[in-house]
View: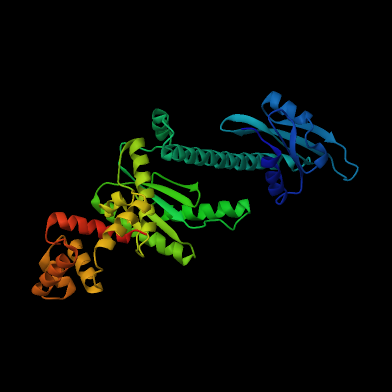
Amino acid sequence: MIITTDIARPIVDQIMKAIDYNITIMNHKGIVVASTNAKQIDKPHLGALKALELKSKSITEPINSELTDFTEIEVNVPIEVNNEIVGVVGITGNSDCIDKFIHMIKITVETLLEQQVMIEQLRFKRTALEEWVQNIIDTDYHNIPILESKAEYFNIDITISCCVFAIEIKDFNQAVFDFETLHQNEARIIKMLRMYFPYSFFATFLGKDRFIIGLPEKNKKDMERFVEVGREINRQLEQEGLTSYIGIGSASEGILGYRSSYLEALQSIDILKQVRSKDKVAHINEWGILRLLAQIPSDFRCLYLDQFSKRMPALSSELEETLVVYLENELNIKETAVILHIHRNTLIYRLDKIKELWGLDPRSFHDAVKLQVINLIKELK
């Protein structure tokens, strides 16, 4: 660890609130980096050099002061962090009581520096984790063995199936230009995600309004729970005035599996934006054939729908509803009649009417597939 002025100055300021003595902190080369005497900054300190050479306490005495009626001495002691001497702290004052303060100050400085080291280590690990996640989702990054080895450093077992959440928050931080506020907003969302999913593999901000979180998935119940929690996150963001879409990929193992899950989560968000639905949270497995249709360019979808519409008369709203419910219930006449609150014969009459108007029989599997495709294309914007 290298002690800099940025690190040492707050420590000196904090100690000075407790004791009224001249405090000086030197780096590993004996150069003053922080002091109550500003004139000493960036200059070599003889007492510190001696303490570094001895690797123990160095006392300089006496210092005759014209401003006091007692003798002052200067005591310098090495600062140790993780059993390594990283600098020196010195105190100047009344020789009668200075010695009892120096050990307290040494412990205080070392404790504060150790805390700083921990903060820096956590910051480094967080930055490294963010870079690792960015490389996972980057389809142009192909050094998979490197990502696998880094997973061990982060204590992430990539043999465990992971389900990836992608959270897109519309216009996130768009009107914020202060870096500190930007960081605080990002950290607040990450904290919220970790609160909902404390056992996540990773949670980070990807930029461009998007957050990502990786969750170990053990069974189907986990998937259902993830969707419900996703809806709760969406509601909380709405309460904060934020519009969000949450896509969930299927659980997969390994680096490429995690990448695939992320791409599925993005695809789910893309479909959510296209369908005429109020729901803003969806697992990729919910979409069925709609997932395939959504990948067809909208121009081609519209062309297909227009060609069909020009040849066929429009259905009444009653027949439209009947067809949708019938197809959603997998051509089950009994279930459809119950949901629509109509008699079985009434349902059969309506299905016959659809066949008469469109030339497609909803009770025929092949015709039902065509009708389902038409309905799904209508769902997409």
